[in-house]
Image (cartoon, rainbow, N blue to C red):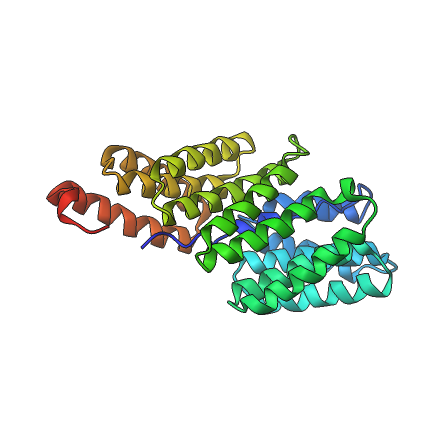
Length: 292
């Protein structure tokens, strides 16, 4: 059973939307965005303090709500994240902030996706796509457009429509590559690429999977994103195991285990130990005797 890339942190970075300004209190939110993966409680603390400030403008309020939604997504509290997404959508609609509406819809549909309410998620995606088509300044929302493509691809991935999933995930990668030096766009690209790797594993295209997970590792190293690296190493190890490259699999699993201990990600650790056990068993009895 292949690791389910549709469950992990993957979508957290996708929603790290670069809508923040550089002046206080916006800079407070900007400063903690990179802590989403390894310290969501700190993000919650800062975002709640921002919301408690007097006379903050509506855009800052929405950004704080986005941060809270992202942080609770990281904590796997999808229902609470959904509440903050709906609050941000309401404020964005009342003030006609189209880009923030698209971002809020991304937050909302992600939670429906995580809650396995895929039809609901797709319906919100359709609304977001409509707003994107009508938005005149598309160069300013390339990340959001990439998010929409990536989320649609991941839903199709979950439904095992691999060809369609790959089509949309590749579109998302192209959008993220429009800003090659932005660490959030690189993180999102890494996420999309790993999901393409998941599709290749589903299709038993092991060589393609190994190539693309290696690419994800390179991107993860570029921005020192240990969460992305952990899952990329795991994906590459899975591909290694499926072609009986147990030595390479052990190396990649051990690399991921070192990262998981630092990240304290129970989902990553659970999957890693499952595949470490399988690798050890394969070495004992030989790959030809098992149906992987």
